[in-house]
Length: 152
Length: 107
Image 1 (cartoon, rainbow over the protein chains, first blue to last red):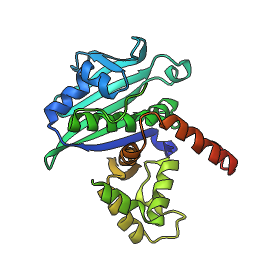
Image 2 (cartoon, rainbow over the protein chains, first blue to last red; image 1 turned 90 degrees about the horizontal axis):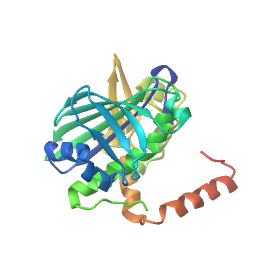
Image 3 (cartoon, each protein chain N blue to C red; image 1 turned 90 degrees about the vertical axis):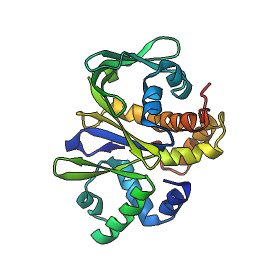
């Protein structure tokens, strides 16, 4: 489930959420909201271009880390993203995660593109299992006030 | 964008075959998607339009190429509608068992 070899590895996820770009931006950058839809995980960053970024497990261990490449609230966020806790994934180096928020008929179209230059990136393949669930949860949380799934 | 559109899009074997192709190799051009398929380019274009409407396929421009990506988020949402919080691990185990016994191996 990777993209053709000459194009690196890319996954694109799209979901439409009935909310405003401002509320969605806040949900994507606020640790307390994040914990509710990201299965206890949250990010740490001051969300400005060039600042460090980390994704933490609920127990505080660092899962992934990198840097904010571009922050244009509430429209676009680009993160330079590397795994930190599995040597074989860390060795792959940095991937690039782009989040785009576009108003669309009373909702917001959220597009997440996660790319790696490596043709068969294990990191991209691993995060690909997680993004659909995280996004479904995020959508549910913003639209109903409750996440769809709580992982125990 | 609605569940109806997703079910309609999935109801056709040719469209499911296109999703299978993107699942195996994500980010294909129209030409790559058509290669080796028993469908005209025109038919594939029509099917892709319905898949895009259902948000199951999304397109990205990369240079001069238009690439097609499988977007599994709507399918995940449908699954979560009926799969309870604690059922997912046992369902994954059952599905793995079925695939192993039926000889399709693991993914």
